[in-house]
Amino acid sequence: MANIRLLAASVIAASVLSSSMAAADDYLGSYVARLSEDDHYASDGYPLDTAAQVVRQDRANVHRFGVIDRDDDADPWFAQAAARTELERLLNQPGAMNAATREIVFQGTPLVKVDVYRNSVRVTVLDGGGSGSAGGFSGSN
Image (cartoon, rainbow, N blue to C red; front, side, top):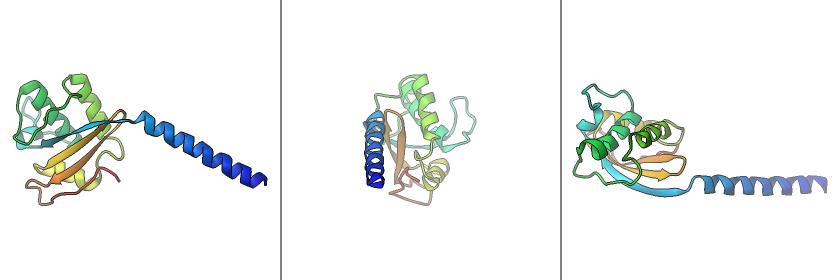
């Protein structure tokens, strides 16, 4: 009987923890972006080193420099430099981009969808865009 109570308490605790974690990472929305050649270089011209930097530079190009690719959506989250710094931090977290997505973003000019959550982001490749791969790569590991 004690084992059943312990099991029930564990299930309830896991359920509560899961619910609170989901609430803490509310879905805010998404945007689509073409990560063009311009997005692979910093504003002062040097080549970027990571996929996270490429995604961040895309948002800097959109919001700060007015370099907007044909497929770029606007977004309400990354207009400020501090928000883009946080975006890069989130992009480097586990689950934001899997290895295949990172490679396509870093090596090519893919069309991506970025799902934005309160405490995380997830990148999905919609079209490989010259990287040699296409579609359907999710941010999950």
